[in-house]
Length: 142
Image (cartoon, rainbow, N blue to C red):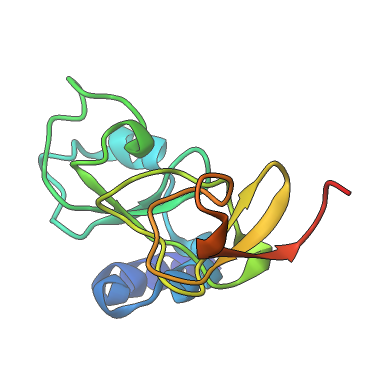
């Protein structure tokens, strides 16, 4: 089983560039965790496009190599180095993050205050900051 998981992880790394955020989140069990990836290899040694998950569970792709021993922060704190992928699956929605280099595209989902929202446009604003750009998909806080 371990060999199957490793093979799946390798396939995802080679195909990630052509996969949507939704497809990547569907395969997240085969995407390495950022902290574990840093322990194995410095981000200076990784290929551009290397895909992993931040500790917050966000799928991210390496945009620019950097020394991860000098800059050990999570990808959310290094937006120039990481591109974020979002899912259109409301079950995979994560808390909104404002990152101008990784906008939410139409139909991408996020959560805010526990509620799930779907983006109506290509969007860098939170649902509370620009309600016209989002549709409430599921109201959790009633």
